[in-house]
View 1 (cartoon, rainbow, N blue to C red):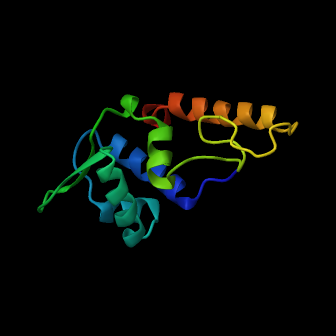
View 2: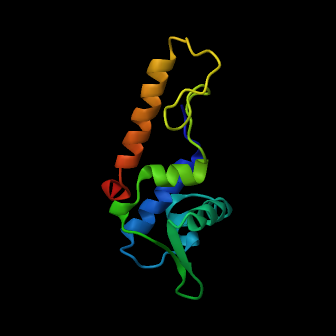
Length: 131
């Protein structure tokens, strides 16, 4: 079970926005502060904007802001937006439901419970808790 750099960088960038107190922040500034490629951030923020987690403003003082309060954005919102469907095991879907041909597999019970526990943790962990 391993999140890609999409999630790691996305969370770090969202923390930067949250710390900026609602003022616009350019991707160039985030890239510089977080030492993340600007091109990579542009791809991530395209997804974050499409999902409604951030808004953008053009112009000299433009940049990105959070579209909701940090306490209203879960880590699962960010991870799911950037990673897509989150299933840690091939025989258990993202809700913890079994999607395996071998229904009598002894590992299913623990894998299903683990999938649900991770999702519950991520949905209840808010961006505001990382500030």
